[in-house]
Image (tube, chains in turn cyan, orange):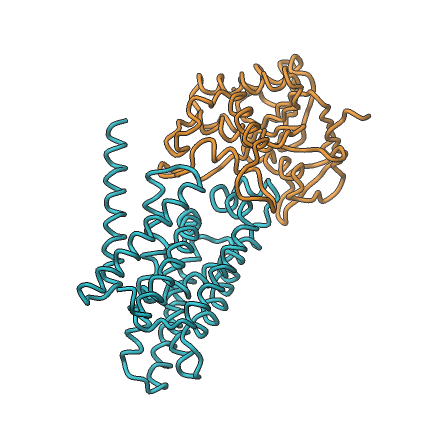
Length: 267
Length: 227
């Protein structure tokens, strides 16, 4: 299997994506942002279509769109939690519309669209992998630097105010990191199913372990398991990799909910 | 005076359509256990926010001792049953700043210390979401103690607790006040608790305020006593 360069690329990319998603997912879950993540992935779709339309790579188009819109959502919704969902709906609808427009304008056949939406293993080049490495390292480095403040702001926003954590700055930085992560993850699972990696592994991990660092480790493990195993099954069966990854991660989530249920009954 | 931590002079604050605090003067000295009492809406939390510098007075001034470190236990927090962090990890959240993600040995020791102080050691690895109301308040208290504050502010921390748990929590606070000399500002609308625990009171009312030793609270005739 590894004698094919595209499989090597896929595994390299998948491993990076799993690491970034496992870590970011812990904060996505704590900050209650799965819907925002989903929206960024739809925006990513529009960005990729835009990239293709003007002759960039889809990844660069995605990065541009997700970064701009994440800042926009952060600024528009501000502190009003209840408004955030509506703002996200508006922005997401607008961007999906744009994506459809760019796709039709660019005259590419529809397989491009399916690649963006559902992901494609074969589409990842060495060049893409390199760019993903750079992006992932940037995300991880910034996370490393702001870790303590992000942790406080995500897990105890009320306390963070008293600890003089600059909450709005942390939020914006986090949204931009999320935009990067979404763009990277979309390469393999597709923009429609990004939350499968950016939400489910971390959301599952929180039922098994109770410190931020351990949740990250377990989140990475769950994501890696899904990606590696999914790629293998996709290779063997020729069915879409995304289907396998989504099914595995959803399965892990179901098991963790069951585990939690049993735990709470035994107490 | 060097042991005055907070000094307010003619402190007033008005919002666009109403005045909350008017010409309030008081002092908090090191080692005090001050109870701030008053009905809802008289400005107790507003006063706390002025001390925390989250609000600025409309007139008058409030002076904090230079370098004063405040530990604050806020009134509301969203901790639901699925909140995943262990009590220990929650307490350590107050170690913020641009530093290594993991705690140093010294920091870990300190986390253990504050949890021991408030009596949480036995449940330190349990998820905070599954802790009882009293245990949660103790965890908030431990978190506020983490960075060695000079002054501890408790904003209605006992409001949602049953009588036994209230007593348990305030016994811990009293111990912090007696043994460590920690200055306490305890905000509450529970007159009975104010009679029992603090040694001084600051009573905020719609038409003014009064302050004095707790032993004088019985004779405080400016307002209607309510229990």
